[in-house]
Length: 365
Image (tube, rainbow, N blue to C red; front, side, top):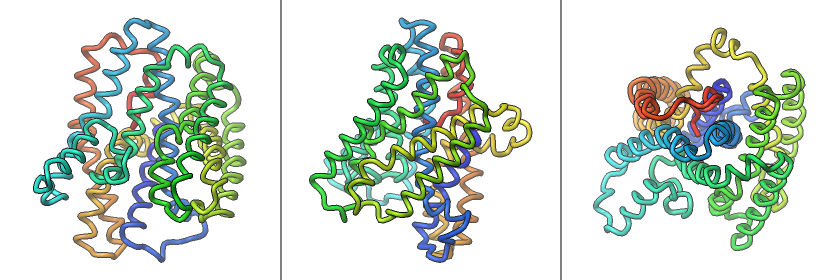
């Protein structure tokens, strides 16, 4: 699983370097075109979160419904809150001069919405502090939904969860399109990426978690079968995307395309879950470590891009190199010296770990 997190985080980093540095010469065909659609890393994170969070939550709930809420929130809050609050504070201190010179109502709105994980509700605050953290609000809102709905998730059949996620996502994306022209891609992106519009992706992960639990801890099917399914569904989903790559001009794409994308990403997650863990931990250990610190990569990389552009201008190769080196270095220090010690301290005071927490202990979600 950490290998997928590593890929998702690095894909987002390279994509943002391409966008922020104006790298028009970056390949638009061949294997490297993957990074031109590196925003798909966020969608992959949503599917991964749907899997690891619901897997962990269901085990905690089945072990002790009475203790579920405390154990669940200790794990989730210690993972996501400290680094989020730290990066918000540092962004304001070093990259937003005059933040507190704004009227009180303005800066309190930006800061308060980020601290409450509701900054994705409004276009003005959506990416105003460390832009990529808009997805943390979606993640936190998903945690709340899981905490409230875990009894239903536990007893509902997987097909009902999948169907419900798809129908809610389609209905939401259709409804939020009505006030905006197709060319207003920014507002459409803000509205359609909110939690109801992402439920087909989260639901895909929940379905996988249910299948693994119902099969006694292993996903049914051979890893190669899941890999083949990922290749076939990925080819179909991306062929559809490239045929309609203007995207926001096509209501059908906006409403429905993320569902076949979710199927593709879920098959990829299933293939990763099915593979022996020794493959990642022994033979691909550096990438496994990158996956462990992927949350830090995600939150620190825009700092690195901003500073690299100041140092190198719009020379994209130099910006990319500086961004990757500095982001990985800072994320490693952040993980080893800040995030992991806090998680161990808080969780050491909690009741015994639930089985299966290995899937979620290093979850970005």
